Amino acid sequence: MMKHLKFINNWDSLGFIFAMIAPIQYFIVGLISMCFYPGGTLYDATSPGFYIWGNYFSDLGRTIALSGESNLISFIIFTPAALIFSVSFIPFIFLMPKFFEVDENQHKIALAGSFAGIFAAGFLILTILTPWDIFGNIHMLFATLFNLSGSIFAFFYFIAVMKNKEFPNIYGYAYLFLLIAAVIYIILTFSTSLLPVSDKVIIQASYQKLSQYSFLFCYFLQSYKGYRLSLEKCG
Image (cartoon, rainbow, N blue to C red; front, side):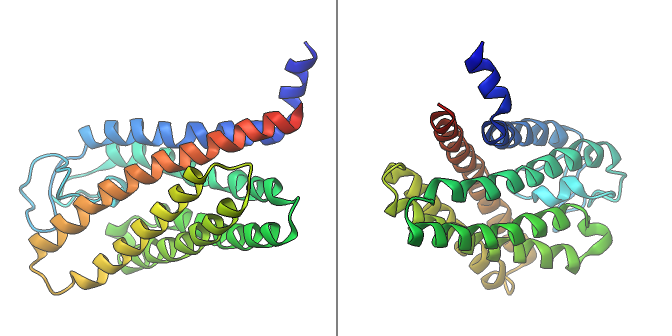
């Protein structure tokens, strides 16, 4: 009974549970919303449904599909799930530095990472709240800023985790993987600008699926570790 009460009062554990559930629901709901996307890509308005290698996740959050049809159902399904996923970063970002308080240098590095993480969470929320068929370049700007600030977040936490004995190295390598994936995505965004639209979209959209699904897994992994550590600290 006492352990149960401790768990209820352990807000850190609840915050990490939220962070674990968020990517799972985003993955599942994202797949469901794809089923309702009417169709169209940037290079082929007649393309039926959601083409995994030719559509971006942002297409699911459009109010009007690239085919010109209403995308209201997909928009209504996808947007709340994406917002829940984005908001889950907030407790995660604020809770993680607690595991590095024993060492002052590690704690400073973790705080620097969380500072960048606050911006990353904010930019991701703004990306979702600005459908790109309505806000165009503003949506793309927020998405790019999310990747940049997210890269900084991953960089600092990679260093902090590799220095911390409570975290096996695999958690540090997960942050390194996210950092490399984000940097590659930023490079592809600019380096493919001169390619034909069809080639550009296929390269970017394909890599987006790889990087985002990898990110979901890594985020769940880090949240689970945070959850386990918070239970240990709870006693």
